[in-house]
Image (cartoon, rainbow, N blue to C red; front, side, top):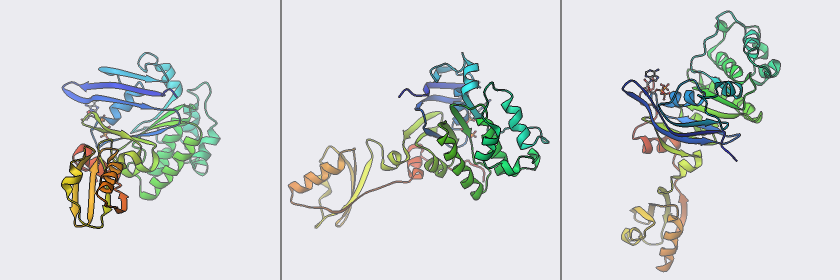
Length: 307
Ligand SMILES: Nc1ncnc2c1ncn2[C@@H]1O[C@H](COP(=O)(O)OP(=O)(O)OP(=O)(O)O)[C@@H](O)[C@H]1O
């Protein structure tokens, strides 16, 4: 299937500041892709360029096959964006805001259905300035969907929400996906990326440092898989390190942890079999997305994130 979003070697500077140095990734129809990185990594600049709201200095962006800078009208019609700081008039009600935004589109989504989808029906007559943070956030998602977009870009979906409101917002995203909307999600929360997305693109210092499903990232990249085993007697690490598939061996008596390429596990088991050693209790080492983040960026995800 053709990607609905293609970003190739995107570059964007603000004066001397390089916000995005070199970012490439694809998003396929129906996927939820999280762009993950700490504050200032270049996430917002990247997705707002995809939405045609910022102009790139280099590289190529295609959304539904078109260049967002050349065809902003097509992008407006098919891409809904929830901006980091959506500002609405304080006295506008939930239902009025949806009606107002719907009036910008030739074929808007059904307002009542959107209110229902986002759990806003009972709050329809509340003024914007009286809404809790969670309800404001839900309204901004509804507004991003009001044009019946094929792609929705959601930026910092749950920042500032309490844990319950975050969970509720996550549950709503599943409903959005079931409408067939492809979602590009910006977040600096590891758990949010892990919970919601099919694929995670980790950006650090304006570059993509990892790209894969949460499970792939946790299992390790092509050159980083680990497993643990117990051997009937201690094994000489040199025996395993001699294999081209093995990059590291940590042995504690009969407990051995081996790291290597994608084929490390069968290679080690075969080699041990040649020496009449049958390992037991083989378990692959699953890392959390937080571990992966630490590994690819060199520091924790929360660094620099205000409390
Ligand atoms: N309009 C602008 N003018 C000047 N510098 C900017 C502008 N927008 C972003 N920057 C800078 O570019 C870098 C990347 O910013 P960007 O907002 O894309 O990152 P981000 O990963 O989305 O971070 P955040 O989560 O804080 O929004 C930051 O150093 C930021 O200060």
